[in-house]
Length: 430
Length: 175
Image (cartoon, rainbow over all chains, first blue to last red; front, side):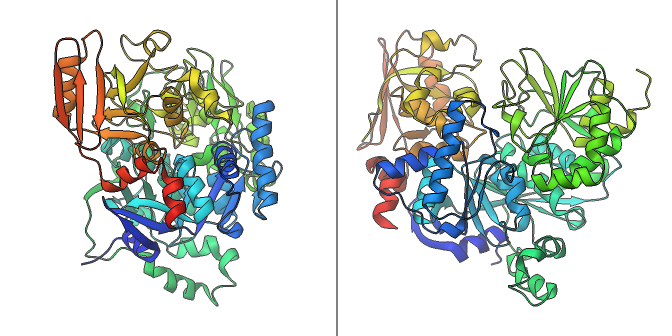
């Protein structure tokens, strides 16, 4: 009987089993940020177990509130900073070198095919784009991961999402994943892995694959996952060239992380992406999704381009294309947050930051910022934001606020018009 | 081992998310106890007022996909700091459910039919208490007018986590 990629990764990492279909897996990487890790650290200290299983496998960033906004967030950063130093953790990214966790860690080459990765952050599923099994966990799982290098998971059931056809102009990975979540529902993938396959994925960049996998959790999924291929090897080559003589050799090796043809799936979903237009969420749940063309004019107060979903250079390029030579609507305030210093520098080099600023955007440093209403960009009661982030829960971006999730191109178009729209509808008379 | 009994709160809604259980603005806290006053602060469920309805509550009964969204263990901690160690629902988001057992708490899953029965028979009673008997694997649901006994299932591993008071103790003794 054939196996899925996730089953193969489980088989290669299983060190024990427990009753109730529990697999205890060894971990290749434990990622940490300043919001969910400090309590794990203080608990380990209080237990007299201030140790880490392997300092080289722990990667740490301060990203959610950066720079610190008050004494409490300053203290969170301090706990993490002191711990990383004390434990000899070399890969620690502090302000100036930090970025949104799920953007900076891939950029540094930390996400690899066949890896098992956990982090105290639900969007850790992003790293499945590299053919890894990557899952968000709570602080206790993180704590045990830090101490012992293990974590428990049920055996993976997989939903195969087969993406056929050709993307329409103005339609991106974000539109596809919103459409998939609409089809699956917010708990349609609970305890399951969403495996993305098909020609649409084959032609997709690593950045777009990360956008897809990032939102697997919004359908309840443990992770999203794509097969490693030439695109993966090309992206990772600067980091793996000491391990392989040639890219061909790397590609050959990574083929072990591809599902067998006779693998057993829990269910399958085949989507012709040619039928999908630009999408937006319309309520307080990520599965409440509509084709933007079917929406009336929903006014927006704020536009936010950034986050672990859509704050990468490709996202900024697509938004800047729409904004080039345009000015945002007078009733809109717009924020762009490049997800990493690398993205920021590239955007400067390409003149994208100029375009954003000429259009009237506020450019912030790399941070999670408004996405979860923890630091800059919080909405007031009753305000509406067109956002490239991943979650639209009631109050997410500020108490009483409404968040509409969409692609960077649609968010940029909405900033210009002052209501939710798409780039190809900009010429419509206001 | 924690206590799994006491006065119940009924939250008649599916998809109650982690932002509703504890808003993100409180994630800057670095102690669990600091979360105590903010439990369910922003939750919108008809007839529910957190400032009035959380007094002495030890058990929550709710519908499907409870705890969806964030990985934040602050959600179970906010419950734990209010002595609410037992949640009974039709289903949970994976991370929330794991976090509960990892803390030695119980996220008990019952069928839709069982959850419907509990809501239908008890939701409008003035005071309902629920206790979980881990030896018999039964729930006892009690109001002034009647009592109902329901069987439940949890895996041996989840039971081990409860008895060990969480995953850190369990893992540390084995791996």
